[in-house]
Image (cartoon, rainbow, N blue to C red; front, side):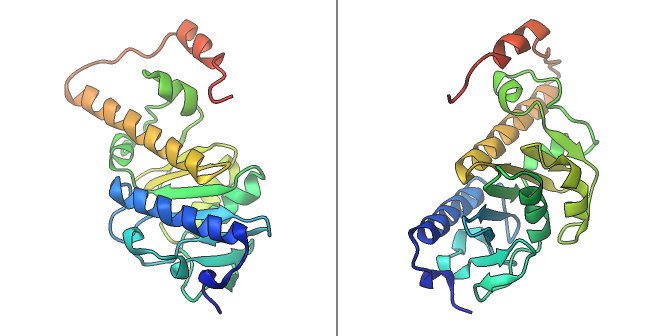
Length: 220
């Protein structure tokens, strides 16, 4: 099967370039170390382009990417798709508006949810209130198996999902939105951790404050 570099459409070139860009960011920001993490985009052909299995994200090239249909069958590419492809597909099937998915292992997010708690349901930061109130923390599922897909199937409408003792899935209309959600998630988790470490009992935003934040038409 030919590599994705052979694909001549403008959409394909844009998709592959964007995945490479965010794969580099994922690695540089330490949201993915070693061969962890995966990124995908849903195409207009009702297929997905996804990062390959067992590769350090910093070194991925367009030729390494894999295109698969919505059943996970490889259409194009010489490598194996990410072993988390089933979870990506479950998110796409569960939300037709989702066009991009990022799976990462953000360390502070994992750290603050090790107990199974969800620190994002009582936000102390405006960003958390704006973007993370719908975040769910789900029980552990074995990586690279169908368990992840089963676990998130009923939560695909949530744009931020954390699997306990594992990592996060963020998704949205494009990779910019999915990555921005990941960064916001990790920043809020880091502040939550350091506040607790410093002995600070951070007061959640009040109902009045949350109501006022909810009226902000951010990005519109």
